[in-house]
Amino acid sequence: MSTIADVAARAGVSKATASRALSGGGYVSAPTREKVRAAASELSYVAHSSATSLATGRSLSVGVIMPALDRWFFAELLAGIQAGLLASGQDLVLYGIRERTAERAQLFEEVLPRRRLDGIIAVGIQPSARELERLIRVESPLVSIGAYSEGTSAVSIDDAGAARIATEHLIDLGHRDIAFLGGTADAATHAFGDERRLAGYRQAMMAAGLAAFVRHADGEPTMPGGYEAAVRMLGDRQSRPTALVAVCDEAAIGAVVGARRLGLSVPAELSIVGIDDHEHAEMFALTTVRQQPRAQGLAAVEVLRRRMDAPDAAPERQVLPSELVVRASTAAPR
Image 1 (cartoon, rainbow, N blue to C red):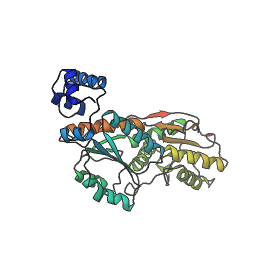
Image 2 (cartoon, one colour):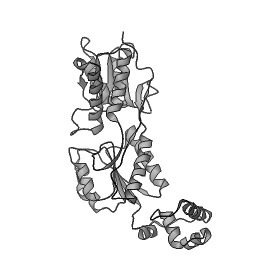
Image 3 (spheres, rainbow, N blue to C red):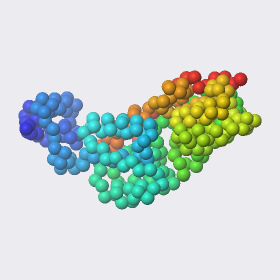
């Protein structure tokens, strides 16, 4: 079995340099790092995690906190995070615990403070439970995806901008009576991004002089939640809107199903726009504003690595782009 000494000899460097090149701890020039990695590959050398941890003072483990694992967005995020961590030689310690549970409170109060983690990536943290403040007290480098504050690093899309793009698309088609479907106006009890998307919809409506038409059918950001909210809003023929901006694609797909159950043709009688570009959006011909959760996961790992290398550096926020994808769920109103 090859040792670090064998790798160092093959690459023509010292053992300390070879160790730094493979572990990522300390400065090594790019050409030297590549030479050491090539030597390690030729010798089929794999560093033992315990030895690397002792040499670098790091656990080589990153904690990832998510509210759910059974929804498309979170699964895609996790795939991106996992790919980024594997590429950087770090292990993933996953905590998939739903909001507003005793187990989640225990995670923040007891589990995380006693774990030795090189960093934490937090997805969908709850402002109401002051989870961000609790994570900061853990004193591990931290990157959040979605919710953020000025004092922490984060990766996100412009949620308000995404909803504004969706709303302006409907306005450009000639719609005036446009409602927002799903989520809640209170970020303290629900997702931060949902509140921002609702705000973006309102901004677009106000800017177009359509304040009188602003309304919100709240509901869970899921297919059943979107279905229930849509049936509730569309059931009254006299007051139903001509178009809906959904808080996410899952809610939008539920709204498509609800509208069709009520005998409404999409988009002839009702236009619907989602946000996300869910894996089922194409199947439902759903117009949506695309975000890329895998790319967000990869970006979060890169930001975290920079935080780990320079913990005293200023917080970094990355806002990833989103784009309108027009399919067949939107059209000009009758």
